[in-house]
Amino acid sequence: MTDALMPTYARQDIAFSHGRGARLYASDGREFIDFAAGVAVNSLGHAHPKLLAALKEQADKLWHVSNLWRVPEAERLAGRLCASSFADVAFFANSGAEAVEAAIKTARKHFAARGQPQRWHIIAFKGAFHGRTLATIAAAGNDRHLEGFGEPCGGFTQVAPGDIAALAAAITDHTAAVMLEPVRGESGVQPFGDDFLRQVRTLCDERGLLLIFDEVQTGIGRTGRLFAYEHAGVAPDIMALAKGLGGGFPIGACLATADAAAGMTAGTHGSTFGGNPLAMAAAHAVLDVVADAAFLATVRDKGERLKARLEALRANTPNLIAEVRGRGLMLGLVCNRPVTEIIAAALEHGVLLVPSGDGRTARLLPPLTITDDEIGEGLTRLEQALAATSRG
Ligand SMILES: *Cc1c(COP(=O)(O)O)cnc(C)c1O
Image (cartoon, rainbow, N blue to C red; front, side, top):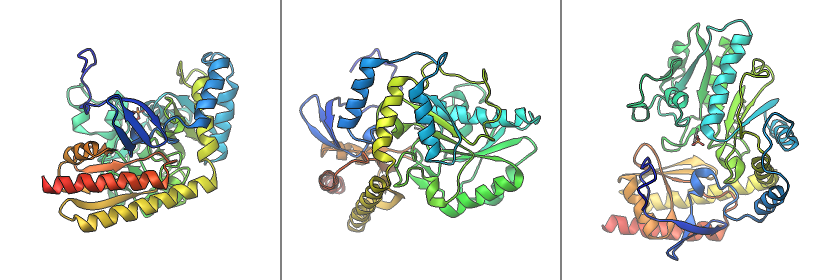
């Protein structure tokens, strides 16, 4: 391994050379079933023909021009995302954290533009994850991520998930918005629950607050609906998207209602790369596949079958697996062993999983296009890995 990379990741010692669908091939010749999908990024798997064709076609025409001029591909993508969501307008960035930053700035500027600049605080939830920039680590309030980086950015508090009274009590004259992930991914696939989301929406309406959903991980079909908020039947005012939207090409998006985004006028925000034609072409290709009722129904079906198989696995190895959580193809296997041990055993047996920040939950986030055969093979390997772990 090279010493020139800043060692900010605890990487497993393996490198991949190519992939097809939900299979990845390592440079040493080994083959893997990919239940990680680049942490919910490769929504169409690897080397999807439509994504490849779209990128190659765009690469031949134009890569980048800057937002000094109109970008028709971005105008059209914003239109598509808005037409299939609650939103009226979109801002394009390049990552999840940037999308969340744009969401935070949109909420703050909304109140400033309405003559209430003192309302710029955001209430988030304990155990949240919103990215690794200075504002997003302050928003999540995770000590492990804040440690050593100086005084956290101001204007953020966190309350206990599921506690509507605590949320109501945390609202002050300075509060602008409430921000949450409908299913907290990084902290171990923890859903807030549809009832709680509805309660939060009602509270925000009563108190005149904006509601921000961080759907960076849950969005773009991951939970079996195009956006996770659809399960609860309530929409946010502002939403951050990223991971699955580009199918592997870096892109982030902040969507908002016209009212919520009223302060985001010319000169208030920007991004050099955001909305670049290559990223737009990738996202269009992803939406061509995912933003389709029949496709989303297959995601829900596959998710239910996978979850049922994991439940059976839990019943057979209760000493190893404590709980199965999640929705669609965003599932968490809560283990009674350190998750690093489970993930190492899975790798050894040819299946890739994603750890969670809680240290005991393995995430299954396969490509949304994964086939039943690939799911079956991945599960067989996972069973073998778990059997080896309980023996070991
Ligand atoms: C991954 C993630 C982010 C951060 O995305 P980056 O692209 O790594 O900046 C933010 N919010 C949620 C919910 C995420 O899962």
